[in-house]
Length: 292
Image 1 (cartoon, rainbow, N blue to C red):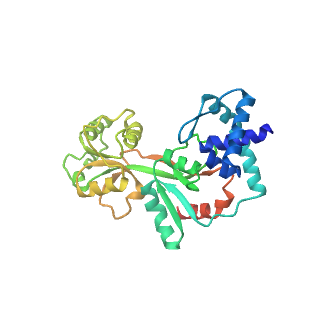
Image 2: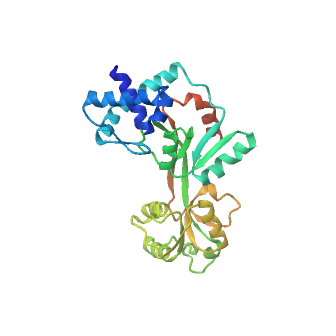
Image 3: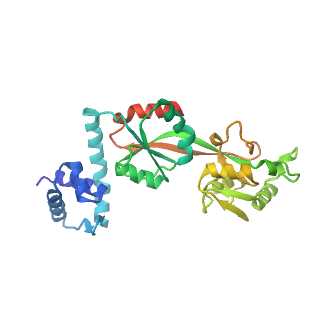
């Protein structure tokens, strides 16, 4: 049996972790694909997968082999995609963070009457769905090392310090002074405030603290809301501080923002898709780029 065919079968099995799913992609029956795997294991004299009741679990040997074969196979797929491109997709299946999609993409999609299916989630979940072909495009805010997935820069979010209107009217509000507040006093004041944060690890706040104070935040009071829209709404109805992307604020927002005394920071978003499939998604990609 041709070893190259065996490696192609291994590559697909590794990606799918399931013989039936991999067989459908390769056009092979499950017994035939199982024979390919057994032949490769005999050829290499090592076990590549452990069988469970549901899926195949790659061994350390399989992980090492995948690193070796993934690049060459994906390059061949990319070349083949240029010679015999897939039919362009008419139905958009996209993954994204909920807030960014609702602010930047949904209004345009609805206006143009596009047919679409959306999956919301964190980068790890979205890239896994992309690898499993559950979606065709994903907007991710992390550039992770995922075999078979291409990344290109799409949009840079700009995060700014925000405070509720009631708090900004307080006599002790540090930005009411004519002179810029001293960093140490400002840090102490901020540590005393009620923060609205996205997650328990303070990921966004930690970025803000790093660029402004070169230290880690020691917040004394905070509430966790894993949705930026909810954080904005909570601050408009109550009293507190946070860090939000400026595209979320708009001209009608009642929240106080300060980009003069508090340094902002950018968070890069990436457009991701499977290697070799950009041509079939070109119309959707160009439309997304024009909308933002």
